[in-house]
Length: 89
Image (tube, rainbow, N blue to C red):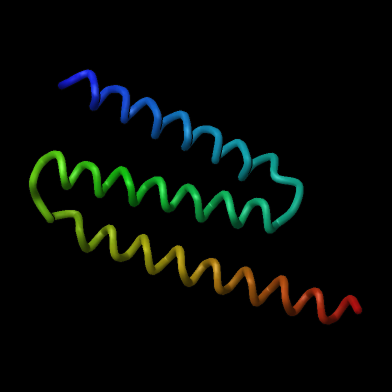
């Protein structure tokens, strides 16, 4: 394994740990929602990098499912927050 791969893995691991910290500590639901989207994006980047490094496309369906879950999750949270904001006014 090359030094560049180790650096890439360390950077992704630190980013994931910081994102998990924001999910746990986040003061509002929107902070947690954004952090979960960032975590899903980081996971997609790791899978994409792994596919590029190993020259295969076997994990492409997993990548597409993670993207779909992220989009639908974001839409659900946005609708929940929008509905909650209209009832409070």
